[in-house]
Amino acid sequence: MARLRVIFESGEPERVIEFSPSKAPFQHDGQPGSILDVLLGHGINLEHACGGNCACTTCHVIVKTGFNKLSEAEEREEDLLDRAPGLTPTSRLGCQAVIVDEDAEIVVVVPRYTINQQVAESR
Image (tube, rainbow, N blue to C red; front, side, top):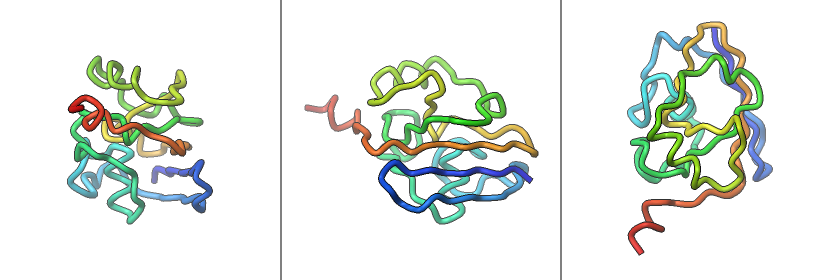
């Protein structure tokens, strides 16, 4: 079983989910087995203004542990991440970061602030 620990900078209580990545998708937003998919499928909200389609940065997370247990970021995700507030070398979009290891131990931080790029670009 994989384990995903979520820390919220907003002060919301920390959450821990144990799951089998092979049972993905858990929900219908984001890539099957992505951090967003796992969270939504286990009743934990992660903002995702674009519906998990890699078109904004609202599902930005910072991976503290287990970065190498996630799928590699593609160019489109990396381009969007450049616009995310609080970008770090281990930042990922929750909708694109697929947990690929059945025994993964992942710890992510959900930043307090996000920018909805879809709204910002339409102004």
